[in-house]
Length: 126
Image: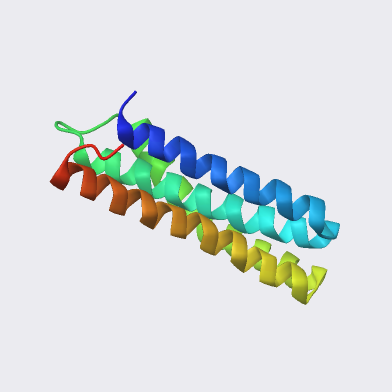
């Protein structure tokens, strides 16, 4: 297994463990807010990855996939609006947990990028 994939798996496992710990220690609205934030952040990263893959294709990809990737990328903003509105209605603690889930996923993404660039520069370090 490539080290970057192993690192991605470990980072994903960290997000799942954090979600389970939060669900065990908090009320339902807080866990729901965290799950919304983490889920939407992963959806956003996936939609951007699909567009990046599409741009990198030599000779272009199928028009069906191009249309699908574009619609998925554009629909994320209304989804964020709906999720934020829902989290605000749940309460202040749910909104804070929504932002924590969002921040955790993006922090894990930055960590993965740093580890991957370090591996390419210095070789495998684990």
